[in-house]
Image (cartoon, rainbow, N blue to C red; front, side, top):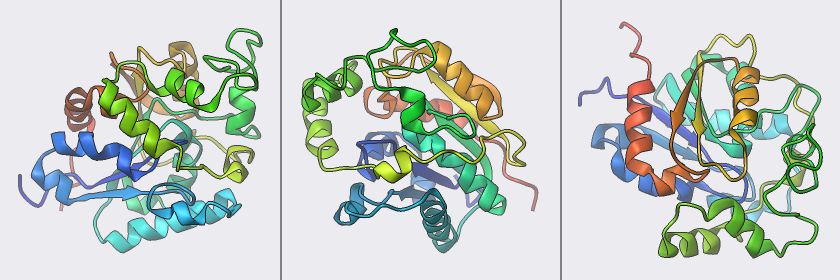
Length: 251
């Protein structure tokens, strides 16, 4: 590929860091890998030492957008997974010139005024139809068992072991998880797409449809994969992202 290769920015979800994208990047072209930026939320990935902070949504959005600006390429395709759905619309609204497309990958997009935790609820799925719920009761389930239930489906044993070793070290700030989203993705000037993971143990397909609507997605793309699609189906996800990436603007 030439210098017109897509510029990519990836943002992980909860209990993850930038490490989670390695298998996906291995399936992308060399040119695209050279124009890829992996972000970390404070407390996660390369910023684990900052786990005692309680940043605001605005502070994290400003920090992440500053890192995108410092990377020096773009406008980029912004891809976010799971809990990153609460940050993507804010990042785009604050710096639309940095992005030409936003892709929500099995992402939770709260309604304006709601938080990620309020959207997920505090009980097992099905007890309260107003919230997503969890695959196992978070109040009575051991942390590792809950991680296995959420992230384990579709993963080989060695991949899951690696994920668990990393995930227990990553801590998405509770201040972000409980913060009310000031707005969703409706009305943004940057086009959005949503990837629905059909085997998702965390976010049921029907809820992903609601999140896609809140994100203002112009299209939903189905991927027959679990929540951790970048680990279980990296080649299929890489191919889908390549097809979805909008053409570069005319020079």
